[in-house]
Length: 306
Image (cartoon, rainbow, N blue to C red):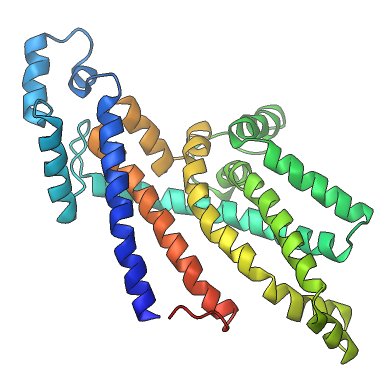
């Protein structure tokens, strides 16, 4: 297990280096000048040139890239061009809000999808199964950039039940969490149904029933446990997607998380902050993939990595 873990950690190095290189290249090719954006369109060219020199933006791109990678290896993500705040501090300040939203979205999706998938599998071919499948298909088809404003219009503007934006109470979390977790819930429900149906056909489930186990016990104690591996895989992989989807959701609901910070930094051409936010998301993806692989061994002891 330790050798597998070490090998996976080594494989993440070229992945993260590729992410850093790609993001650095793309952000510098975007039209616009950070110095001009900071000083305004009416600023004198001499002032813009002086600010570019002070920020190091007048150096060749390869030199800027090499400097950025060297600082990154020392654990320094750089300094925001707009606020002069450390990128690490800016991300850490916004991290609790993003984790709170991601956890709430995952809780909504898992709490809704797992029971729905189990019921659909146990009652295969019935009206309940067809209704669950239709609901899951509807959830997959609705993008969160459309669902979010719709929820805000109905439950915040028209009915006045929930706040439309900001962070502070549980009520502020409801609409963003539903908007972000709806698509994942639909995918998880379909995966749970398909995986559980496959396990219910296995002989060991019939053997458990023959030994006197009730239907519910045979489903939950035996079939459901063995059907969790693909579900856990999907949950682990989709957690990174939740963070990515939070970029849109946080912008819609003015949620003060990393996603909104990323959008704001792109607007201001704040290169270090953009790179830091995307690198954080990439590290989260890689970390969740590794954690998912390790959980396999807990769910199914037959799985060996070495």
